[in-house]
Image (cartoon, rainbow, N blue to C red):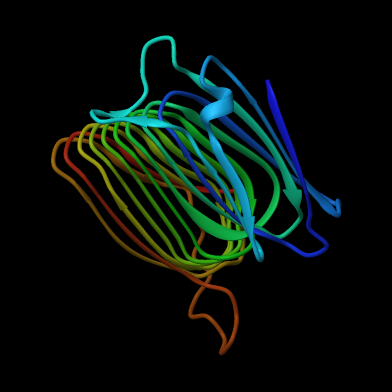
Length: 238
């Protein structure tokens, strides 16, 4: 195992590349950034600090990221409100704590982010994506996985080929959901006005929302655009 420590008195900009294995990041009240890497090629990983940026870059072969028995497990702790930029091949990404925002791209890994206070974009080829709370503009894409957001407080764009699209509680903003064979489920708090433009080719559309009338100036409201081919679209009161 290789271990690194950096003094970081303020939030950092974390950049990570890892082909296979895992990336686990924790944002906490700390004045240090720590990086622990386990795996056969852990000591070949480039780890450095450049101002407020912390870079953790796995070694590559000419054919791309290392594979087979070359999986690397990265465990990283950063200050709260840091930004997150992660690129993986098949490695799963888990980020707990609060982040100012960021971007995660994966070929086939699952991605889980606890809280994003700033804009965030997540894309994966075939993995699932779960975001606990999104506080700003959010874009989430996957080829065949499920997309799940616990709470959204701003605009959200979601798209998937065959997975489900779920926002358990949407407080405000423009919501766009596009799917093929999965279901779309959106929960709306009572009293929040909702404008909808939803359609499905062979699925069902169900709504349990109560009319809230026109929103007052400056009040929370939602614009929901959802399209799917064979999935159901369900709007529920929460």
